[in-house]
Length: 317
Image (cartoon, rainbow, N blue to C red; front, side, top):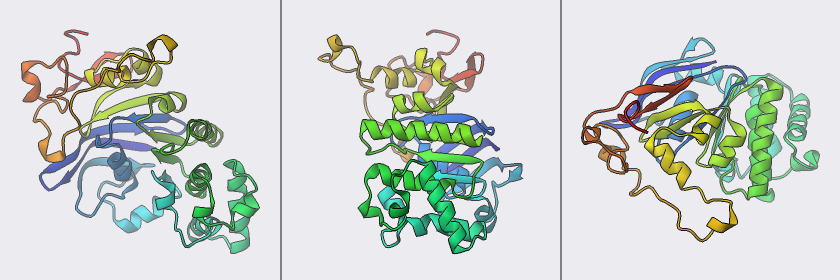
């Protein structure tokens, strides 16, 4: 389905993604987590062929067996919507405020699938029903501002599913939604992926949402993958200091701990021009070694199907 090897994205001398390798098969659900600015959304855009004009991509990228690393925009247009689709971060910004949402969902059906308006409308109605939009016939005629945040998110999901893509990339699909609606959206994405045999890449900083959605997990920091493996294994026993920091910063559910001060990772994600030469997490890591600032750690196996990019792997836990 998706086979990306050593994907690097540069903006001049600044590196936004460095040697990213991931593989996604049909039906697989992959979570991508990390702080804002770690490269999660940039990875999604790279896999969609939607990088900014100033970006330069190197490496290998195959989508359904086709080499797309140096594909033209016309070639990408033939794949988007039909093979690979994306749910963007902010529904109100992603939807055209001047168009009824039904017309927005019908557009790719008419353009890519060659449907007439009546057939496309029937298909859009079915998609609204599949994604759990109440009173779908009425919602087809409404504008984005007339819908709730959860309804707009479901419209974006329906739009992404319109042409039956093999891979759906969901970029922060629960952002700005209340906990109840977010829970329903994540459950919906899992159900759709299972029912359709569709691969799902779930990008989020919400570890609870990722735990419900993804079978496999990659943790990103500074444009690199620092840890990967089965979601349950990583959440139960993280190996990279950054992953440990993320998990320790989660608020505990036990009532006795509610008044305790949460641990924090010191500092913030540096800008692209300020990233350390060695380990990207250098300068914020609590167990940093002298060589971390200058020597980049390779990904090393930490168990069956697991790896982490840290000099401490194999030395100390």
